[in-house]
Image (tube, rainbow, N blue to C red; front, side, top):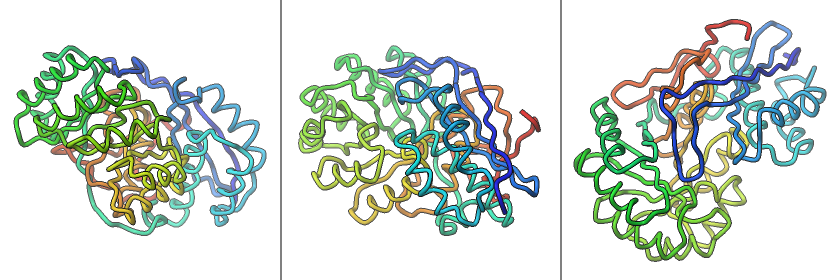
Length: 358
């Protein structure tokens, strides 16, 4: 089956409520939907979430697809997906989000042509569902506690708190949230690179008293020695996020003993192939592996679910489901129940385009 057409469509999906982190304020999920069609008329989809801090923008994503990848992929046989992936990596250096969107669309299209879910192309089912870790936006301590309590009321049993880098205020944020949600809720915090090592260690010790499980990306992404220092002195698990964009990054941090866990995503790693390498490397070395996705079309979450379903190295706690925080998504097929997402069993990614032509 050959590739007959490659298109992309800009999507601007408003947040119901702004998402604020130490580094960003999101009011709109800006993304690019990739659509690849076969000669038989089937369509495969992938989603690219882009914003300036990622180094990619909607404009750069469209240019890379239309001017670099499309001319090279048209007419290619989908049965040579592995070879196509190698060619894409040689043609385009960096641009992991573009690569992820295109690769996801190719996997979706190939799986649909074979009438199987994508997870069958990735090794088959390991788990049937994942528990959702929902994010609370950065706010004053009382507001964050209220938001976290509301999430628990809605059935979520795992919450992720955004931190600002203000030590006293972040301590109060975590304290108030723990009081609001009680002892049985899984908590992790994410500093988005906002701390230096000494301050991060102080916060980690306070978080341990609150039974917080994981402290994510406490220091700037390239400060491996600072990350190691925090990990050495922290009583709770330290997780890398922005520090890891490839299996090579993961190997470097694991070799240095700088992390207890790694948070990866399809967009950050560049697609299924590289994200699986990271997850397998974590598994064989005894390091945890979380899987996340940002708000946008549920096409992105569906792809992440297919990967989580087929890989034992990926935690059963996944930071997905943020598609519920935005409106205007042209896709349907995923539904969160009791704080969990079940793996779609339909063909391809398991989600459907309800608008038709975009």
